[in-house]
Every structure is written in C-alpha cells, then in structure tokens.
Image 1: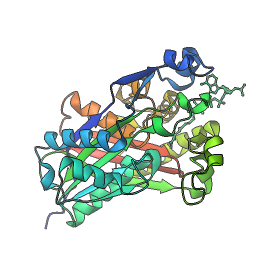
Image 2: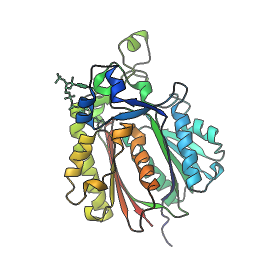
Image 3: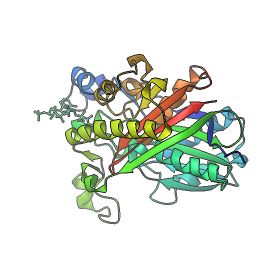
Image 4: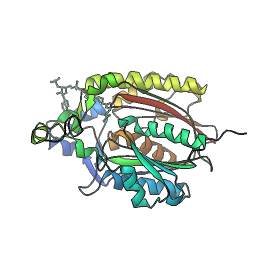
Amino acid sequence: MTRRKAKIIGTGSYLPEKVLTNQDLEKIVDTSDEWIVTRTGMKERRIAKDDEFTSHMGAKAALEALANANMTPDQIDFILVATLTPDYAFPSTACLIQSSIGAKKAAGADVQAACTGFLYLLSMAKSFVESGLYKNVLIIAAEKLSAITNYKDRSTCILFGDGAAACVISSEGKGLVVENIQLGADGDQADLIIMPAGGSRKPATLESVASCEHYIKMAGNEVFKHAVRRMEAACKDCLEGAGLTEKEISWLIPHQANMRIIDAIAKRFEHLPQERIFKTVQKYGNTSASSVGIALDELLRRGPLQPGEKILLTAFGAGLTWGAGILGAE
Ligand code: ACO
C-alpha cells in the first residue's frame, strides 16, 4: 500500500491596506527610520482597521487558499488556526472563521505557538492527513498584533504588523509535499516574550491596564540570540531527518522577525545564496504566526516550482517555540 502524502494544494494570504511606515513611527515614539532600518531591516508594516479582526483576516486568506485549491468550504474536514491574538479567549477563532466561510462540516480549534504557529499547524495537518483521520485540512495563521502592541514602547512597537496566511492540506491533488517537520519548545524561557496579564493568572484589572500588562513584553536582545541558535539547529536537524543537504534546498523561508536574524541564519548556510532566502520583513514587519505562511504564498505566486525543488521553512517565537519544515514540489 502506498503511504498517503500530506500536500499543500492551495495557499492564500491577506494583508490589511493601511501601511505604517518608519516615518509614521517617528511621530509616535522617539525613534528614527535609520535606527529601525539598521537594527531590523523593516521599512513598513500593515495595520488592520479598528473593526477588522483576526478572524476577518484569517477568513480572507482561507477563501483565497480554497480558491487556489479549487475547493469549496464544505469540503474541509478540520480548521486549525494559529494565533496569539484571537478575537476572543473563547470561542476559538477557528469556529468564527468556520462560520464566516461556511465550512459547515469542519471541526475547528486554535493552537497557540506564537511565531512558530504556522509550522506547528503544518505538523498537525500532516499527521491528520497522513493517518487518514481527516482528508482536507485548512490551516490558517492570523494575527492582529497591533491590538497587543504598546505604541509607547519603542523597543517593540516598531516590530509588529498584522496579516494572515492559509493553506489547504490534502492527500489528493498536486501540490507541495510536507516532507518533514521538526518542532521544539523551551518553557523555561517563557518570560522572554510574554503578555503578562489577561489570562487566568492575572485577569484584567484597572491596575493591570494602567501598568500596560496587556501588551507584548520582550527581552529583545536575549530573544535575538535564542532565535538564531534555535532556527539554525532546527533547520539542520530537519535536513538531516529528511536525508537532505542544504545544497538540495531551492529556497529558505525564515520567520520574518528581523533582517539581522535572517542574515545571521543565512551566514550559517554555506551553499544557500542570498537571493534564495525569501524576505518580506522590510514591507510587513513581524506578523508572528502568519509570517512564514505569507512569505510562502508570495513565493508561490511568482510562479510554480519545478518538480523536485525543496523549500526549507523555519520559525521561532514566544514559549519559547521553534521549528523547521521541508516542502517538496511534485
Ligand atoms: N529607536 C531608537 N532606539 C531604540 C529603539 C527604537 N525603536 N528601540 C530600542 N532602542 C535603543 C535602546 O533603548 C537601547 O538604548 P541604550 O543602549 O541607550 O539602552 C539601544 O537602542 C539598543 O537596544 P537593544 O535592545 O540592545 O537593540 P537591539 O540591537 O537588540 O535591537 C530588537 C532590538 C530589534 C528588538 C532586537 O533585539 C530583536 O529583533 N530581537 C528579536 C525579536 C524576535 O525575534 N522576536 C521573535 C519572536 S516575537 C513573538 O513571538 C511575538
């Protein structure tokens, strides 16, 4: 019996229209275009409207992915959503999207793995599809990070943007085979990137709001070092697990957290030329769970890959969490 393969048969993404430039940020906090470009490589990011939420962005990306897969929402068996900015603590954003796109037969749940969310979803969808438990899985990564960003904190507000990405994963149809996924986590470092209040440990109070504890807090410098080390190791483990070498990789899509982090990872790959490292960080900033999915969708929109070409994905985020994955064109 031939083993079922999990394949990405359609992708989509959505970026809000409103652009927040470095020049705009200069008017809000004590910063400069020069500092932001030198330290992060970012020039602008997208910001959702006040009445545009994570589920709205996720639904738009999902409908595009379904259209690209030539599928209708009622063919989906399971919806997985990765987000750290759900519309509500509950019900899940997956259920809100299920309703808005009319995926009546689908079950749905949210997964919280911060910026590594897209890779965590890929791994789950791969096992759902390969095991035969579900046939068609819709994965969606969506973030409205502007809702939890403190625009008085210059060390974080320059980094984040909003956006969504989606993929249909199925055992049938032509697509990108999800060949191998390597995931990791280190909860000992949970304090490095955290939203301290709003959960059951510290429910919202007047004090928690006054002390800005409902925003992202990050020890940027420490996170930077972990990010480079963890993504490099995840990529190398993933390649080894798949029996591949870096020479066989056509594209590297890293989490778009900071151009310097991307460059530091790139330096650790001798055989991967700069032009093969896909970057969107300059125009969208860090969109957390969505970032790798948005970049993947943009890369595929340039034209189909040749059979046998491989894409290496890697991400890192709060938790800490990290991962890498290999996609292979059929
Ligand atoms: N404009 C001007 N100066 C600034 C700004 C700013 N926007 N932000 C910080 N500074 C100042 C600091 O106050 C500091 O000044 P000081 O030396 O007088 O104290 C100086 O610049 C250097 O600050 P650092 O924090 O050391 O700057 P660094 O080079 O580390 O860059 C950054 C900061 C961009 C945040 C970087 O550390 C980074 O990208 N970290 C990783 C982020 C990441 O990967 N996150 C992924 C996960 S996110 C998630 O899961 C939601």
